Image 1 (cartoon, helix red, strand yellow):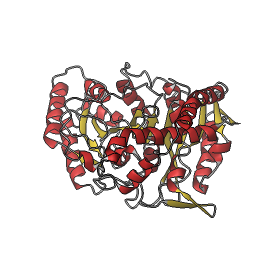
Image 2 (spheres, rainbow, N blue to C red):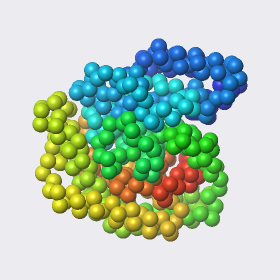
Image 3 (spheres, rainbow, N blue to C red):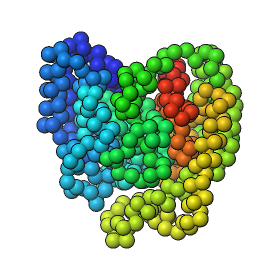
Image 4 (cartoon, rainbow, N blue to C red):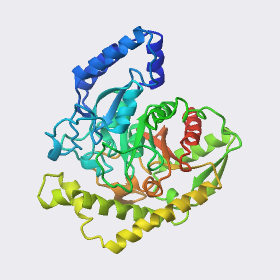
Length: 442
């Protein structure tokens, strides 16, 4: 995989140039069978790269992401490129006139937008395999799901077709594909990053966040995205976690785990102990009710967002249409009660995190299923694959707490396993500290 740190070093020492890097990437993207990109504009990319070359050659001050190739989920506007949301409805959409705010912030640090990545249609699916443009494929095994909905961003990163990517996350959609494709993904604190210029699925639950090959790279991206000075979020990465406390999330978070994931969780606990941290079991109050409220808010707001298109028979992927229609019968009183659970969720996680520095759990209870696999056998029983994929990530979309997915091991088939770290609101720097400890031990 490409890393921001390695590329930035190579540029500074003149081992390569942005133009050489981007020319190679464009060739590899064109030849890739993974279907990770929907739109690429080679001429514009190479023009950006030439400008980056000139800045380096002239000794001009450069940003933290100068010449770094970044992919953007095709839910987020990039000036001069269409935003399709993975849907036939927007396949011939006019190009965006301006960048989304997060894209503008990346450009301000010198990033080169290499293309728009594939997504589950309208970001409404964790499997990542329902797009008008075809499914993105997992770089570890093309027959497997990438996870969704930021499917193309994770696949492109995992295949080394970019050095960083943007995704969105409403239930799992950054952390899950990151986990299934073996990259790092952060759902930041709710509203830390502006969502202007991004298509919304649920205003209550949507987050934009960075995806990367390493924990440190993720922190560099978050600095740029949040408009913070360099090293603001990376300042603790690499610092010892000795004497700190990790809360092992129990109860809900230990149910429905496949054996390799359970084993990796035990190894992650031991890694923290070896690093000098204390690991204590801790249970988050009412987390099942929090999960159920998140799911109800999601389907209600998604249905409301798409009501006009649904009633005019606009084209959808069949599975996405069916899922959207599940929101049609939600009663107003049920939606209001679910919304009231936001405060309950915030309080439950806040009270738990007052006792520990971070919470630890798997990102997902299983490794990447086969594409189109809609039920999964676990302990001799069949379960909904969609439910298994999202249940461990969705609660913090309602509570708004930052959650970081870090690769940690693999199953016997070489499919990635990831751990999820959950932190206090606006405590992303601490998540990166603990995430770096996990990455170092992996």
